[in-house]
Image (tube, rainbow, N blue to C red):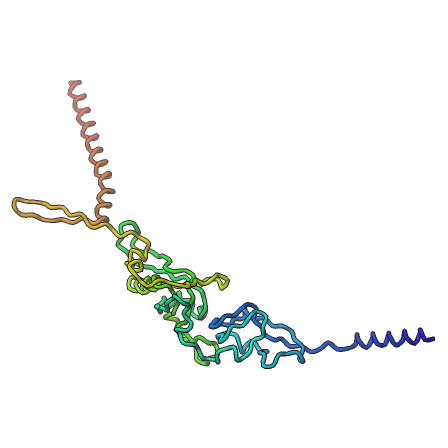
Length: 292
């Protein structure tokens, strides 16, 4: 009898346990990766962790819309909840100088609006910057495109930086990037010779960082041929032509010399062909006279 009673009690206990409702949970948003100071929060570097209501940390953020797009004010380690106090206020940015990595420079450039990834390019994006320019260099065509810098970090754009603003975004005309001193010189000079274009890199690529950069010196000096990766053309060759006591100096650039060299074989071939034709006529004439 006692065994039956104990069995009934055990069955009731198991049934009560199984019938107990699951505790209610909500997603607490935590950092999916380490988020250093001044980094920008995106949907990719956050994840929601289901948490029971009585275990939710005080002041933890439960709505992803409150954090995506904002800047981190103090480092947040992976797996840690995000708190309002760890973020810069909405529509507030730190000073630009605070965002520039040590040894780097902030440089603002104008970009081609048609190819500037308007609406897609955001601060913290990694980009390559290319130059399309015309050149009179004898070794290349009249127009050439080269990549000037790769994997540089965008610090700011001419558009609204936050999606929280009610104002409609403005056209993207300029961007500010973090660059080494020599890269900054390249970008500044390149704007005078052609059109700059921006291409977006994967967010998984490692940004370029410099822990220590020497002061600018003669190695940082660049010209338009450095931008295009070309050797500077050789100076023109001067030739003096005398007619009596009068002298005229004629200068030939490398392009003119190359064109002359290409044309010389064709001229010689035409002369040789004419000589062969004349020889054939003479031989035919001699043969005809011999028959007479």
